[in-house]
Length: 243
Image 1 (cartoon, rainbow, N blue to C red):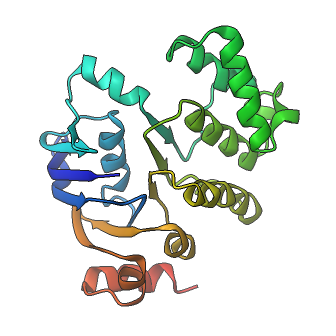
Image 2 (cartoon, rainbow, N blue to C red; image 1 turned 90 degrees about the vertical axis):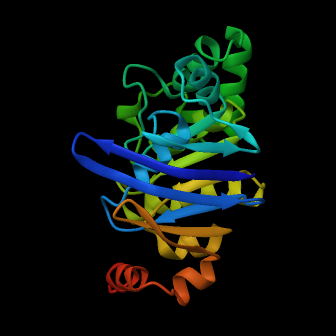
């Protein structure tokens, strides 16, 4: 994908969350955002997803400008698959319905087509036997895999992952990371927010560190994670890799 972020700023009340954020990539499949909590990573991801509007700045995806007006945003959101750390599954629907209902109601699929697509993608992620279960009946790893399956089902031009393993234990974390690594091998385009530095190193084409609402450093994973230039990056990595 081609991705260009031009001088994003964003405030919530008196709190400035993003300050003159700039990114530009001509050919990147996987961008990983790292940095301390509260640094602006999730806000940046939500703006890219069209779930928040920037106060100023522009976003271009594959040379197409994203227009932050409601009508245009509806189309943009339908082309982006977003996976949140808290799953965001409908608790009253089954795993199958969590995938098929958005396909039917939002993306215009027939009921038969939506159900067939949902079954196919659940089968791909080894979840078909759990199709009739509600989210409460699934493990955390299974819930997150259903959320990823739902994001994939719309055939998005871009996938966004916001710390998808932060609420999971190590075994379930590995489950979910395996799925994301498989998507990376397929050449899917995605932006991932994570604190899993080893995983970031293995899947990222580019790594960007956000701190205090600014891009502190950006480059290839080996350079950023093993030989960073910024004192902020060095301090962040020394803390997160300490134990």
